[in-house]
Image (cartoon, rainbow, N blue to C red; front, side):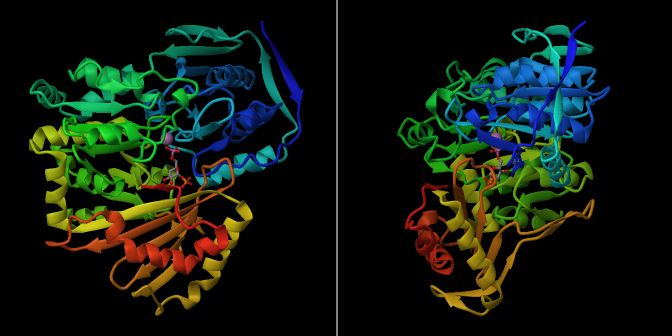
Length: 543
Ligand code: VG1
Ligand code: CO
């Protein structure tokens, strides 16, 4: 019988989960007691005795060893069963699905998502609830408070479990079921989409490029796109998850997925391109010669969802994070369904999905998903697009232009200013907040300010209040600027500036977004004094 040891420890400062779990430099996570303290705090808050959890991660450096530690701690804390992806691998949406499918008590996902991986990069851990969704703020706050009082953790003295192939093992008093990470997820997708129609599309010569960015979606994309849907071998590139993502920054946007962008703008480009992030919950989609902004993608998918069998009955509602453009709101109005506006982070969609208030959700940060799981889902979005392309028989460009003709176009861009000294970033936000009362009625760069506030959200299901979620400046002509600081970074502060302008059409729908937004961009700099506060004239990443 294996031995359970109680290890004396002391609180470690700063174990506060951000927008999506606790993310730190890998070396910090590998430090003495760091992972153990956080995991014990998670178990202390959610309870572990007699419970079953899902465990998996995106395969980044330390994923395999962290999994063994978490398994030993789960066994020592009285869990009865852990369902683990083979090789400790699970994409975030696949983990969410396994939690729901097996009606477990939740799951632990090891990922820092779109942050780079490797010994000098980032690692992360987050807890998902029995509904499959990220723990809400009240729960992550309780975990953080627990880390500040922790005095000991429990650990089973045992050897590593063989996670290299599917099978059942015993670890102390606990069962460990190692499962194929792809099979259940692929089956879920087959139930939602018209695979026969998409197969026929590929058989007709339709070509696609999927860039998995050496991250977790590789095995999922090869199985679904190439094996089941008949896309040509080699459609999926960078398809092997690597501990350092092959040195890539697995953030699917035009800056970090540059190779895909370049290919999609060449003469012989494939018909459709896509990329996903470290843990497989984000997606970028690109047509031949045309980039689809995530906010537009959300709106187009909502308008066409009924073409996919899983959504043929229509949508109950849609939800978007506050900084996401209002394009999807126009679709909701046309469909006569409600549109919800939540703070940034998928955890805020969970209640709306559980309560049947929303079917499709999205964020401007390349996240789209539905009530099939409780996370955003990169491959789901790709399949939704493929289903739509197969059903409509049009190009991506034609579908987008149709959409703008019908609904008007919400020109949109996000400018990120990275690695700012935290005190300077805080000062910028504080100055903006202080200026809020005086803004309405003022003009800036030829734009008249109608309203300005710091976004607060009352959850319509449980009534919980989340404040200080981003400074919004709304203009008379419908344009909008949002400022907030990132909650996923591990180095310095990142200022995100979200820019939006609405063009009703029929003319003026084909501008370059940066040109269409030029006055709004100038206003954003002027209002916040970005250069004065940060010393930066230009953003590091533009999406
Ligand atoms: C960012 C995005 C947010 C997303 C979050 C997690 O958060 O802006 O929309 O939900 O990342 O995505 P922040 O706080 O840095 O702006 V993932 O794919 O990294 O889990
Ligand atoms: Co992610």
